Image 1: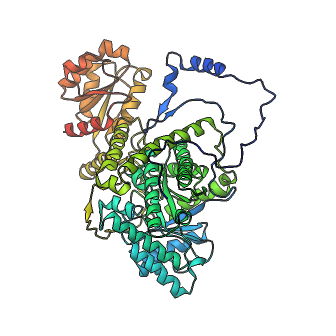
Image 2 (image 1 turned 180 degrees about the horizontal axis):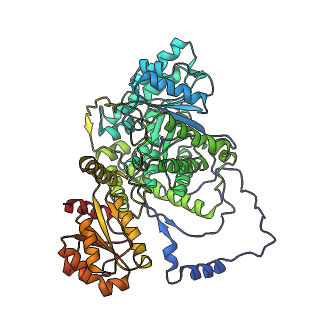
Image 3 (image 1 turned 180 degrees about the vertical axis):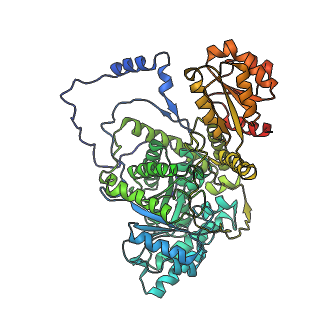
Length: 633
């Protein structure tokens, strides 16, 4: 029976037969001590404290700069050692013929699986097939389902239409259900979380899920069938532990549903698989995938069954995708695939780099596919099972994620499961708290988005996407309504400002501008001028720089010729103290709205003269940019 973990603290259980052998690669060198390392650190950080080297995640997980190797650590068992993960390619074009052409192309050029996205599903992101037999038949035409090609379904609200369509299609082809490798992706809790409610109560939905899986299993399908999809929490801005806890709780809810429907637990747990998001934080992604296997093994132990490796599918993160400088998305996706692969993912889907701009074209899809092929076939990332096992940092991070996620999982269990936690709003509120902190970090550029919030390129050329309109998902009329877990992209606030800049360019022939009031030599104003240019152009405000001024009237004349009323004073603290007040007053007399590059206090006259504020590392860049747009004349 599924009992016993609501009051149990997280503890660690072994998942292999014994410890790994100690390698003596450095045995001829004298051992280095932690004291020696601390001495070198003290010399490097100078006046900073050792604590400044410790970072903290949004879950409060502390990441130490160095720790002892875990020589007795046991590898976390995932996919078969040395076996590659499945390279999944999205099939999401709303046109069935176009979707089929893409699927055939992918299958013939290295993809080992197809991820069928249906309109309104958690991973559709505005596009997707129409649920039903017709779309399935067209999309999979010419695909040898009896070969090594795996199919993963993301049916959304169209669960019945998609499952019935698969059954009918295979019957028409004369294929046995057991001969195809299909993961059905049935996830009524996830669909309700995305839609903001369910068309029935959880009691009814659980019974319906158990019946649907039983029918598919009776027909000979091997599964797995039910998906515990953590992507919803990640896409909504949640933390790693929140994503793990939610996926774990959904998996347990589906176990209970299957057991109540008459399926033995040993069989039921094999009918469930997981979906997690892989993002550009390499270490947290690796730790998260490792942690899920440990957490699920703990659930299996509590159920009285011997742990067996769960199937975990990965998708690169939607929330990290950017519209601006989208080629950087290729780098983000590469790090995400690398991390998920090393973390033990069984299958990985890469969102093409133009996904945030529209339906990706053939080139973007090819890059998504080849990203995985190169990492597998040229970098051989799958050859070593759990390569981070024993690493002090990774073992500690994995264990801390387990502890944090287990506590959150217990909280969901105390609320009577994920459906109840969604219905009472507790889960959404927890995610919203982390999302707001994350968005604040992006606004202040503590969390950097290269090409968007940092190092923008205003003259970037547009990229090609398919000319396909977004698809309206099937209507949902929830009997039980609650707040939806809405997907976000962290770059959106900066992109909205860049859109304003583009609109102004189209309307007037010029972007909004800011005049950099540089005082002195380049060595004196250069660092702060570069910082100001980076900040203002992140919002689409073109920074007009110069070689610096030593003459006040010449600066004011240049400002008046610039055609803008915005200015930013840039120089060193020494020059600010000597010349800053007079220059600032002169700019204000010329009706300029002026910012000062530097932290509060570098120019005491700023408040008296009436500057717009200071720009510095850690300031609210979004608030500054929004204020700048309000002041443009």
